[in-house]
Length: 65
Image 1: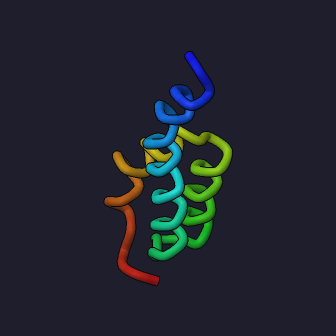
Image 2: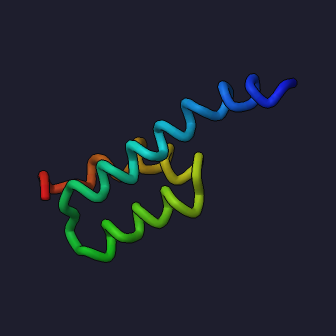
């Protein structure tokens, strides 16, 4: 596998992760710590954090910040 092929495989995961960080930053949660936790999950657990946010975190938002 070349570097370009590897990059194409990981690009969707990175876009999902960047979107999750952006979405958590721009929405309110029950506590400010929860927002920080979701953003840290996106930063420090790249694919798993973004996927967990899409599956569980979006429902916990309370509106736009």
